[in-house]
Image (cartoon, rainbow, N blue to C red; front, side, top):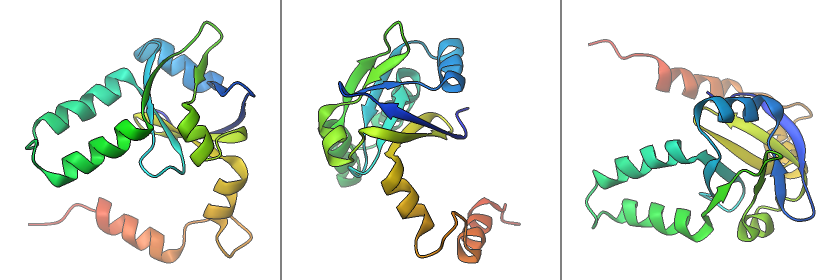
Length: 154
């Protein structure tokens, strides 16, 4: 399970060196194959191929005519590319994502359970800080989280 934030860099050639904690997990559980995509053009989603194949298996259960399925595939294929981790633990972030999400230079690599998210460090900080001076969950955020994660009694 990927968790935490690891600030790092995407080099001038567009390569992300996986932070050591994440690389260790990748080596132990997944292997060097990845599918890198985006859902919104704001952040790269780096899926170990096993995790991406689980998503594809879920999509296979949907009707090929389902507009949600089609839109999901259109967006993830538009941004997406296969990638293989090199011997130094680096992954090439697709050019389209580097350009649209400004995933260059200083980035944050965020653990997101079964995949990693790569975001521009400055843009991410501005997004999560909002109008405040600290990064925090609001009372409304916490209430929404509690509502979605608390089991409903029958």
